[in-house]
Image (cartoon, rainbow, N blue to C red):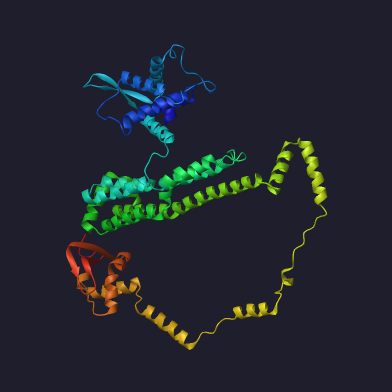
Amino acid sequence: MVDSVYPQFFRPLTLKRRRLIAACIRAFYARLYGSHADYRSILGREDLRDLFVQTMQSATPPADPAGEDGEDGFTAGDLADDQKLASAIVRLLVGDGWLETAEDRVRLVTAYRFTRIGKIFAQALTLADRPRERTRQRNMRSCKNALSAFIERRDVEDLLDAYEYADRVIADLSEDIELFYDLARKILLDAHVQGNWDGFIEFVERRFRDEFSPRLVYDNAERHRLDIGALIERLNELSAAEMQAIDDDLANHAAWAAQAAPDGAILRWMLDRIDEMVTAACRTKQPELFRAMESYVRRHVVLLSQSLYMGASGSGAALSTLIRCLGEMPEREQGAWLERQGAALTPVSVALYDPAAVQPRKANERNRAQAVSIVPEITREERLRQFMRQAEERAFSLSHQDVVDYLLGSMRGTGALRLSELPVGDAIQALSLLRAVEAARDHEGLEVARLDAEPLDNAIMSGTDYAIRRRYIGHG
């Protein structure tokens, strides 16, 4: 699409002054969409030129095309001063499809803005220049906030936002993982032979302590996941009529979701997908972040130990001197020296002990080892206690199917009941009441509705009452 509409779109980033052009693009993007943007004002040609001039003058260090490859792209007249160069950059970006003009009929001026494709790549350049300018768990928290907004306002746009955030939530941890893998790959490229560990020490004392330490707390991501799960639970408790209305609204706003959802249950499908994506991010990426960080630190520890050993006195210093001298030899002399040392080591043989020949030296050691290996005999009292413990555990063990059968039997042909109608005369009935909602939700033939306006208060629990019905009975 870029090549067909703007065939020279990437040309500004291949010129000798591409760093300066990229800085101007980032400055314009920050002016329009940054944290300090003034959305009420527009930028005319003079304003845009002044912004580019300010960017060129404040560049640290100043952009110098000397030694850069690529064509120049500017005439000698364009390079006369900063004003002319800024105007030339504006013409270049407009001509190659990064910027476009729009007429402001109120102020009767020509305003500049990004093209659609130009805005996408300008955002990428801005994020690449400031990769860590974001809060922790950004998409995770945004997903939670969007779900909360949907519960309050019933606006399906909030639900679609929550789905999009959940789809990107794995990027929160993936960026950190990629960072540690990149750091680990750069270790061997650093000057560790000279013992330069300043970068590693600065990373541990500053960035790791301030930024990555909070990320390593498992509860940091798990807390957000549990909050999202609680919000999804509330939405799953909506009545069938409310869900149908939301499904109809979603079908109008997101046709792709209607095609992907089975049996037209768009809301349930979308909530399940949000929960799956957030859970997968926490279950897979969090441990992977731990492993990436452990690999990075372990590699540094190994190299640091090697450096300290090579720089130590005694045998370590002798080995370091030997390796250094061997490395400075010409290749032919180095090979001859290694051949001579290999020939000198040829008669050396290594013998290992036969494990069968290794025996304890004293008889009392053998007796003690045999005594430890004897399995102690279980007495009748211990077997009786174990039997009683297992019997007590099985006495109050109810499966979901047992609870569902109890609920279906309690409906007495009506197809519905409330928790407040269930008796609590014995332990089995009490346990069935406590697990009724959970078992009904897991059963495909039942549905659960929360009755917020009707309280439940009996001998074992108090709270909100619930209605449990056979699915597709007595309601749409």
